[in-house]
Image (tube, rainbow, N blue to C red; front, side, top):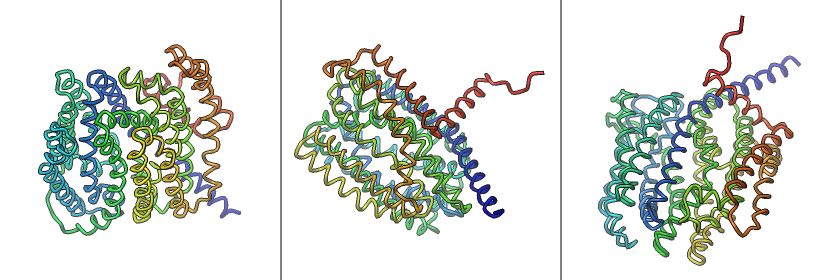
Length: 508
């Protein structure tokens, strides 16, 4: 009996430690991510009203080419530095050397093949765009290495300074260049400004320049890890970027821009919920594994909280796609509305994608991640290619209703084996979140019905539905006794302390 009490106490202490760590991560890591998110949406809102979809489409195609090429750099992934149990200085130097080598090859290839690629898409303006972005990749090697080391050390405050500085200069530079008539090259110029500033900030904060001394002494460790990780990243980038390349080549850059902006809007919940925590979850999970702790309970807790935030937001976006597109992008982007509705519903199945990767890497299961990718991404890419080639833009969106559930099933299958999970445990973890999502979506659904499905809801209708959706969300959290309600309370208390509304000393 005493042994059972001791074990129970240990689990309670471990759970409290993990949740305390997550709260600290949310305060430190999400600060820069939310600043970047807000600035990004402001930039998109402004630039989408300055540039046409065709102009933005050229930058989308250019970034798709660069993204596809840069995936080869993941064979020298910085995740190795975060996950590795014992990290020596020569490991860091070897990682930098391998990263730099891969990047130089990629940059050289883009510089040489920029003109043939531009000719293939019939866009001569892609030549300077690709060359400037490739220069950004080369500069980015330095801050990328430093940020990985800071995350390993849990120095999220320093990471926030670097990321926020880069986000501010990117936003300001993009808007200024767009207003000055630089068209799609505004994004390339902003990327160069971001790379230079983040490199300077990172080096100023982490001034141990000896980490940049080239050596290949431990390159085999890096490449052994990066072999699986790089193949996984390459296939993911291929699956992610091919739709833009295909639409830009078969139809026009205009179509690539529409699909890109629709996807971006549907990623708003992920960015709000996960973009700040995922970069920090990998170090926390890795530290837990190094201390011999089990990740099953923390994973289920994270899944329950994520779905209670992500699902209501996605349903609201699907129901109110028309006003959301008008607010974020402007009137010239209304063709994205049906795409947003389809992709938002498909994204409901992506709840485990972002959390699963850091869990698997923390457990040293990068080989499983690669095997899963070898199954999921070629199948997904084939579905997407056929849909796009046969049916064009809207068919590409509809194919996500097949692709996203397929990827979710495969991810959960591998996770279940590693964590010893049962399907009923997973369904139990997200069951209350599903009820919360339905409750919060009721009011936006009524607004859509009241607008007769033929015209966009008015600003007043959207505002009222938002207020009632938030009220329904909170009431459902309370009615289901969802653990997120406690986290909301902790966040509120933290905000009160930050603005000094809560007394720090007892009144005498």
